Amino acid sequence: MRSMPLIDYLQKEGHEIFLSSYGDSQKFLKKKFSKVGSLKWFDLLFDKDQYKRTKTILYNLPSAPRVIASNFLSLLKLVREFKPDVIVSDFDFNSSLIGFMQNIPVIILSNMHMMEYNPIEMSVKDKIDYAIKERPIIHGFARMDSLFVLGFVKPRSLPKKAKFFFHPIRKEVLEKIPSKKGFFLVYLSDGQVDSMLSLLKRFRDKKFVVVGKKSKHNLPSNFKFKPLDQDAFAKDLAECNGVLSHGGISLTCESLYLKKPLYTSTSKSFFERYYNGKVVEEHGMGLLEEKPTFEGLEKFFSRILEFEKNIEKNNFVPDSEALKKELSLMINELAEKQANAKLASPFWMP
Image (cartoon, rainbow, N blue to C red):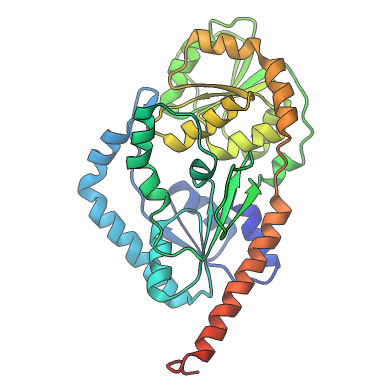
């Protein structure tokens, strides 16, 4: 969803685009765009409400060489046939490596790099885990001619080749005017929902709209379940009093844009989401718990007004238009440099 505004804008600017993705994202993009390549990816494993990184690695280990090789060869074939002037990647290593091998400029759009340029408070153990598990990934790109760092707070520092933009959000949310209709919006992974609902049903004085599949448990009348629908979701997001989520970057940014306090429940194993929740908490815009507790939820509900004031102070305003224009300009600039380099090369033949 977050890529859609950029893709639409680049096409209107006259850029010819070939997309590649996997899973539900690939199916979604294929409904709207004609040139979409299909990739493979790994299954993520959860134990009750917690993402299990080690189990996920061990489960996918036997198929990893095949999946990695398949993705690399698929992208290489796509690049050789499409012959792009520039590769634009959302934190994908294969595209960076292929850009390096084929001498094609690569632009990386990444919210993950915020972990480096806006670090959170961590224990010594967590810092060691981060240095071993996350930092090598962030610095593991073979080629990166330009880096666009995306976030919902400004980074403390940036390297010279990087540019920061407040994270773009989709049109359906940008058009909404926030209000408060007295309910809280719940959007979690399937594995998290049941444990969260068992706690939330103790809050008889609160109303909840839960997005996703309906729980098997009998719940009080203050709960309402809805299937995921992008337009309806944007409306509920604009009208709720606060959001309970797993910390995904898109929903985090959309919630802050609409001035909605955030309660995030996610494991450190899913560090990107944990990082988002921790930044929200450090800026006083919500609370973070690895596992939901009654005490944590009670604290969140009691501090809603405080969180709202801090969200107002933070004043997150997405740089959607600025990002679109800068990305288009950077594509043109890198493509022109590439063309001039080919003309200047004694080995280039028209």
